Length: 220
Image 1 (cartoon, rainbow, N blue to C red):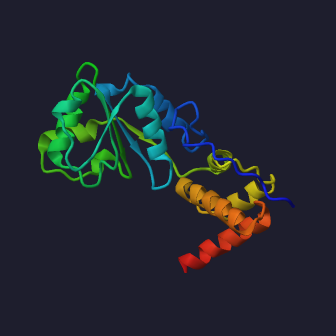
Image 2: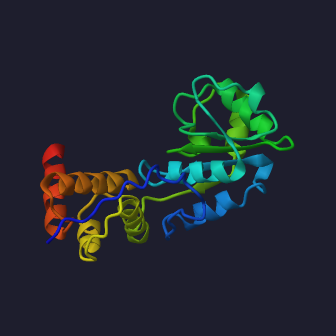
Image 3: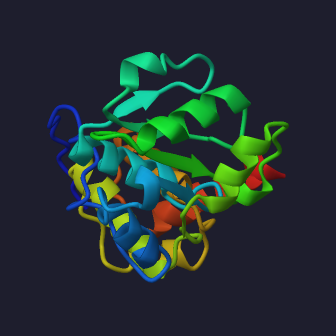
């Protein structure tokens, strides 16, 4: 078979809510995020396992809302007053004082706060009683590990981003054997693309098998 032509189409478009791949595993979370700015007290915690797509959804919301993306280590809390804010990995390495101030600012006019985490806010440790009560009251949207509909959708998107059109048989083959993770899907597509370019080979089920077997060998 002739080698597929790869076109350099420039940088990928930033995440958007319209382009976000939806399925049963994330439908409720997407609905909750899209309810902005009607979140209770301006806050929402987006909770789910690693690789479920929290960051993709959160970044899509940030773009739609014009939110400030702050770093957990030392955010300038005063500078984000009156603006929507995204803080990722809020259950890891964020100080009590930072969370307390960001949650309070979210309720002000023009404010808002989307937190991503792997665990529910009610389980986060804190020594501040006022923060404890706020964490317990935070509305939560849970996103589950991606189902087949979501994984197939993101695989198709990642292939399109690289201008690759594999045979349809590649999709069920990958879905039956890959880890249930969006970053894993992106990595598989990247490796398939590189292997195809290096060996002047089209992306087929045979090449997909070789990539998956190589991944499994690395995990041993």
